[in-house]
Length: 67
Image (cartoon, rainbow, N blue to C red):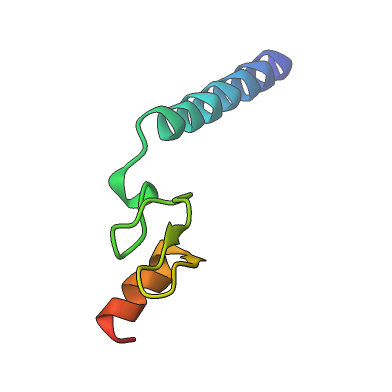
């Protein structure tokens, strides 16, 4: 009886884990899509208008905010 319960527990745990991870990957909450400034994660670098060099978007935002 305990072996059946353990199998049920293991398969139930696996199912909950897979469904939870699938939900996060398919329909992620907005807090997981962007940082506090609203910049999406994995954003490519941008060209800084003053120098023409590429910088991260977060650095450019900090520059224009005066930080």
